[in-house]
Image (cartoon, rainbow, N blue to C red):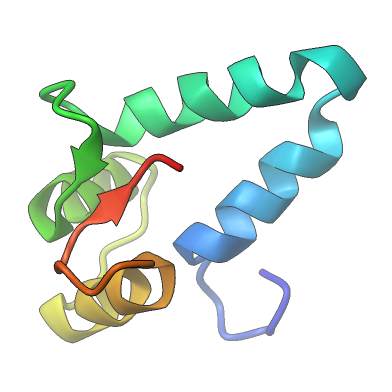
Length: 84
């Protein structure tokens, strides 16, 4: 929780994962972490998928919080988080 708001957003999650990953395995580890969120394996994470995974981790987020997380990580403005 880098910004001290009591939750870990998607960007913070990726940063945390990147710090734990060692050199050559970094890309594969990030891909595996993304797959945890991409429940149906379609290559992107929807707000519903993000909310479900965060809930399974004990983070009960409002729809507004989830949409803000998606917005922060949505690089192309399509309302989804794509693996890049």
